[in-house]
Length: 168
Image (cartoon, rainbow, N blue to C red; front, top):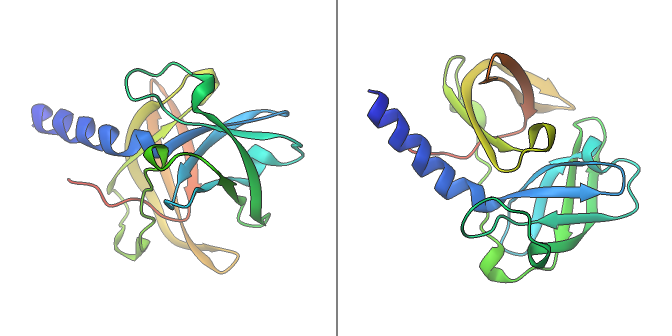
């Protein structure tokens, strides 16, 4: 079973990491995900709140080093403070824009496997797995999912509006 789980996680990371960007602002940093081939990036509003400059850094094809030639200016196009979401727009080459699909979460159940790629404490393109902890509550009229992901011995709680369908 562990061999299968490892293969699935490797596949998920290979498919999803290129869509995960590092959002760097003049007030901090966070993660975002490319959701359209036109350069739309979904991030949390708290990542960009109060920022005057924003940059999206794309993952290099090999490794996880941050490279300035993969950094592009980002401009917020929509903000939902209640849901803590922000939509950014970037003009980047099509070869860097690998969108992930945000799907209907109505099929997600408590206990389902979930995966996250992000940037905790300055690490880049890290991968963690966990289980959905709650489903069905709403934020600003939208269904949301509370996820609990285990990273080392700490738990991180994430609130997201959707997940990408991945092989299981």
